[in-house]
Amino acid sequence: MTTLNLQGSARVKCDGEEITIDGSEFSLEEADNRHIGEGDYQYETLHIYFDPEERFKILIQSTLFEGKVTTYAAQVHEGSAVILEDELEAVEG
Image 1: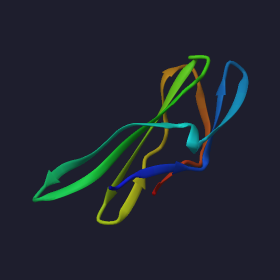
Image 2: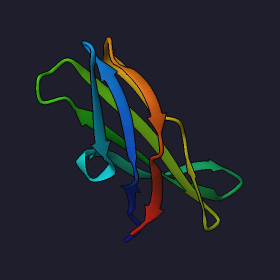
Image 3: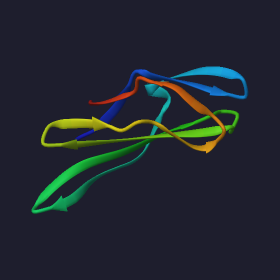
């Protein structure tokens, strides 16, 4: 079975505090093969980091198609955090 795991880290600022979040701290919330037309499927994942103090959530999506992994930029979904540095990368695992 195909899986994509996050490696690297992201640096976030929230309430005046800088926080470094390791890729392993993100939970895999969604993963599925999606039909994209003409008989082709791509594997898609959604990883989410839930701040323990419930100040923010960070989402990161990735895809695997024809052996190529694409990782999209992390986004703050809820809260007032700002992503200072995004070094997260999805890898097959």
